[in-house]
Image 1: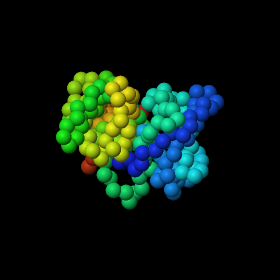
Image 2: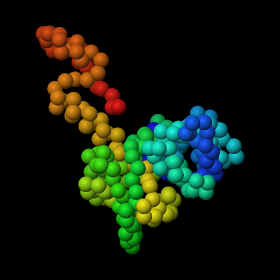
Image 3: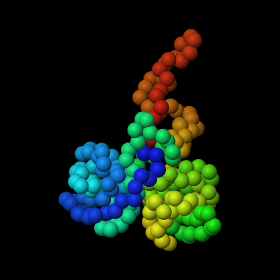
Image 4: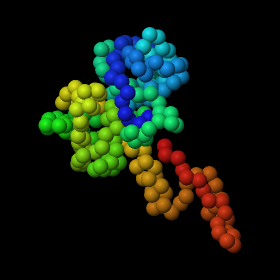
Length: 230
């Protein structure tokens, strides 16, 4: 779990194709590797990766073919800057919002509008994700927790302050550049729960037994647990 507050702007050192369609990615990040060990999680442009090795401020991670296809990591090359964040601890301040590091889709930069104190960026929004994005809600773009400023049927916009422009990859993104998108996980849970209520059938183990059992005095036993989101 992450917060979407980028700790460091790292750099891709090498991308090496491995067996099948996967790859081994080496990333330079002195800050995030200071206490990193094998098996730790580090978000790279919003994608949760598992550390395989750490050597001199550089960590390596295996990236599965599925991740390369479903995120913008497949386009990474040596020298590319990347947003880095270590997994949050229970004592961390939640400066952004709850971020899983599981990319829901890939958008792209549609426009940039500079202003005196900030810059407004508009991104293409995949149709399958549009229902989860609302004005003033949270969204993660390349691992950066942002507040939605405006939203349309196939786009959304955000306002970026100078610090975000300077310390993340979003400051240098050009028109047409792909970006990783992760919508607010709470929206997906709400959708699932409301969907179950609409069809009138509880989900999860024990649901059938609860439907078949007669009501007992004082209440109904065997309430079904909340179903998981696929």
